[in-house]
Image: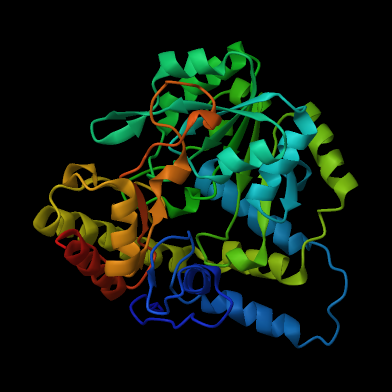
Length: 401
């Protein structure tokens, strides 16, 4: 059995890499350690790269289409991992999940319609609806037993009058697995209020050992009838730059409307490598995924042990899925801007600022009221362990300044 290497650092600087090169341009610093954007600093799998090289042996890169082998790889993966037993008819290629969310909003809602999200949440859930002219309604999550949880009373109050609920499943930024009971309750509420659910399950394949992801569409016939599910190999196999995602819809009426709309836009024709890479990932990726998740799980444990030993005042929500951790530094009593400046200019570490993830209380339901996770930051653990420890050492020193 091949042993994959997740320890060797890969120099990504100067490759037009958003994660590494964008901060250097923004801050004018070339020694920043980026622990923010959700891609991994591990080499993309060899079987994916080999498939791309093999395709490049053909001298023509013309218009392409997904092969039967591509659809077989997708359907087998969904059935084996998520109990989604489907055919190609219920699936549609999309060039990315953020784009897919925008497409769904434009297809099923009108300007001014209310779109519900639970905060804190992945920033595009806030930004995309507003860019589409929709009103964002933030339903704050609560902390329960150290994890984010849905307050059903608040959720049902906030969903009134909304047309769509965009759900992060598993949760981003804190990697919470919602579980079947939670999803059933959400489905019941959404059914009562006639709300369409967009379930972003891009981190499902990053479910850590000891946990189990449940796809929203599988918890009840009602959930299947009022939901759109987005998945992708991009996070799991570190191929986000290829723009390869898939949409699953079980309900025929929803499917015909949305897939017809997508076909009208002409977005089904992904690039050659989006199809070839995704097929290789789903068809050959089981062992690589297993080893990667074991390594990632040890990174999570390493973070937890480091915080307990060196930064005990940090309140952390550690991931059950994904390589993202949510860290609350409020106990240090350092104002937000000073904290952010210390991380950049003293620690030279780039984190995702919690203020971009939405509102934390219910002073106002809409995102326009303000964003106030001022002392919270999201940390990316998808990297060699030495890089993670380097970042943590830098953060500790910066907090002692």
